[in-house]
Length: 368
Image (cartoon, rainbow, N blue to C red; front, side, top):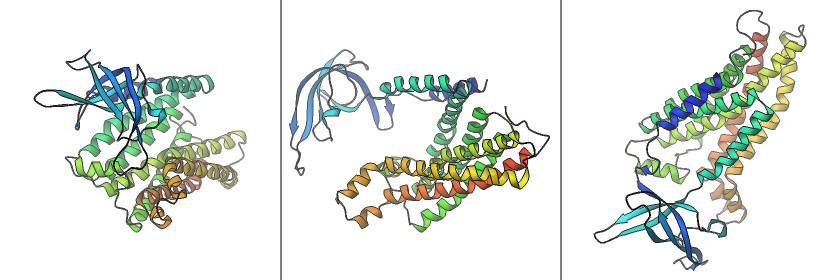
């Protein structure tokens, strides 16, 4: 039942989306490559290295001119390598510009998203084969979390104003849905949820102080600059950066708190006489091992995303002092540090709550 509810929420979130090919910046037309006319290099002024480009014949698959064949360029001024070259049958999205006499088409992007579907199916099959009902619950929890983001958090951010409050309230909703849908309603889940809330408060408070101390403007990426300039509603990008730090730490916080709560209840169930301080110390020893591995995982995930920047540092393209003090690098390091502190604080808090609930003979069930 929980799985069905989560999947229905995700379906509702996607059904609420508008036309996939229409956005504020314009409308795109679907097409596919029918012939590669030429592939060569083109010199770009101010760039020493030649840029790959292709001249393609494509057939329009949508719009009033469906079936029409036109010629377009791909690459040249856009960075392109052999892996990005197109072949017959590849699907693309085109933008069209009109004048009095003719229409001109430009390749905006390659259609890549459908290629993810087989890998998503493999993930679903692996989860169901290994985790069975727990795997189905995990998928439902993921669906429900995405639905909360798409239906509540994103629309609230689009309305402008302070992005932090809707992110915090939405994060609380995501945590509640994720924990109870995946792990059921019981004392173990309640302990994990309360411990996660404690970590979330720590991350929010420390993140706010760290961003202020580091004098972060929030313009760490091209996307935030576009949001600030092109959006019709004013968005506080500095507080949006804090919101991103909070959201980026949610998964690790839930993982830590659920693992610690499960460990505590498992120890309590194995030895009925193990309660109070001995149970707390025993579960805490397990938590210490979990902290080390999860902090390492968190750091690798963030620095993996910043790998091109790290490689740029190693090549000496910018002075090291400039690169290390850039907002992009500082924000990645700051997020890892703040999230790690939240993880560390989550362990003793979650353990203490789980010990208290494990010793209760009445009230909520241990498991769903």
